Length: 206
Picture: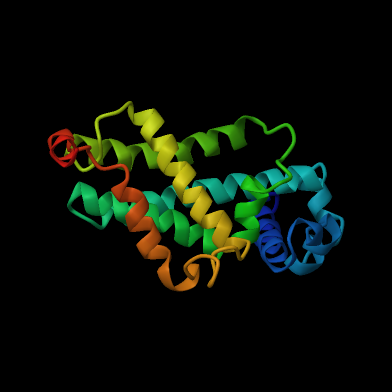
């Protein structure tokens, strides 16, 4: 390893920032605190990130790329398109709930200002991962015939709603079912709404 190789230092900085973010939210992520947590000088992070905003953008990019990887990896473990859809959707929720501050950094009330091309590319990749499982499910007849991009957007809206409500503590008895116990059931019901519409059955019931 070259003495000038900055990759290990940057990796340590990002790991420290990940820890601070998940422990205390964006307010806990300061360049000096990151330096102390990473075991480097408190000024070292300033050599690699212009400011806190740049560091948060890097964390958001890593989070989106990790989410895409989790969706694809979970789907790849299944053989049937329907199972791939369920597994990939579940992986989205699991990743969000295991990293709530990272998730809210991206989708919370205070959106990141001026996202750069790297962050945009990561967001596109995460959405492509959702589109992939939707497209496969449509091809097999598990999901209804509709433009894949639009249907993937609807699925993302459903997944985001479940994740956001669970993270913020709104899925609880007696107002709603307990999200901690029944999130999988809610996901199954949501996916069922995207299944092909049986027009003949509907007409028979009218």
